[in-house]
Length: 342
Ligand code: YSA
Image (cartoon, rainbow, N blue to C red; front, side):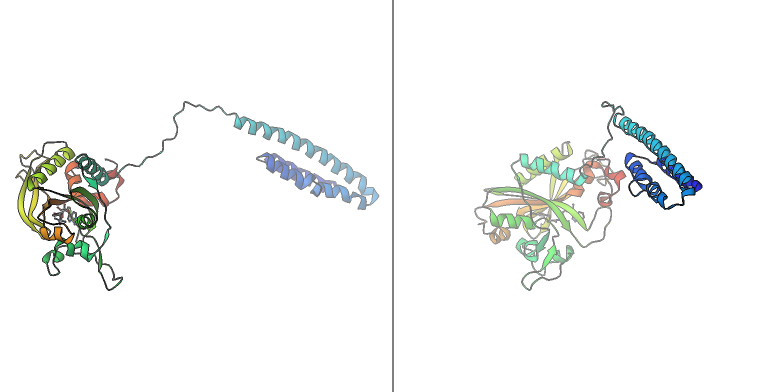
């Protein structure tokens, strides 16, 4: 019996000394010396032992109880001291903190915001339209006839029909915003509308199936192509922070008459000729024109009273020139090594 008590005492002592904190220590104490602890129960059972064994077993058990109580108290003091010291560890308030990684704006957003600020300073409002458009706003209201080749040219993501009345699509350009805005506002007006567009086409260094355009529209009394040229030249000069000249070449859009391809003097080589401008000093930048009388009529404006210009430019195209990025796909690849440069 004395040997069993000794084994129990050693086991209890070892566990008490291994306790990592006060809570654990209390638990171990209870396990052996609590009201239902192993040693306590043993002491209570002594009465059932034969008299001859009772005396030696009782002595061993009481000695074990006394030893374990001392070990418990000593270990308690040690742990109390340890936790007090932890709380008092010196704290250097001047030490540099842990740096939190901050995100930053995407280069396309940077160019979009810069463009918005420049146009706002010239009296333009920012207008928005839906990315899911109806066939009417994306094509018909822009004078793009049902059988017009433009519909083929802008290969489109059509959505599954929701009802019989109108076909829905992911807008192929931001021009529908012109229509939506004119329908709900009276002229004179000046707006830009930056936003996401989608075309069902193969990607390459200058084409994405998802890209951003910035639409512009100004309608007023006697607004002319000269006004357009002045506004766009001012915009580009401020965006690229360099003098830019603009030239207009005739082209065709169903929703403008006349229509222009807008070229800017090369902002990389100052029109001297380089690989970006193909050596001729001009960069093809955007489509534009004077708003077609049919479009004005479609939104309820009288083309005899009002004239206007409109344009649409790829925001990636501007960003590629501003930051000298040679592949549009880099903007959407999610490569942090690329994005962290802006
Ligand atoms: C024309 C006349 C207006 O009065 C108003 C707007 C316009 C622009 C017309 N809505 C349009 O979308 N013309 S566009 O097809 O030549 O595209 C304009 C610009 O969008 C392009 O110059 C190019 O920079 C960009 N773009 C077009 N498809 C793209 C693209 N950028 C990247 N990936 C594509 N797949």
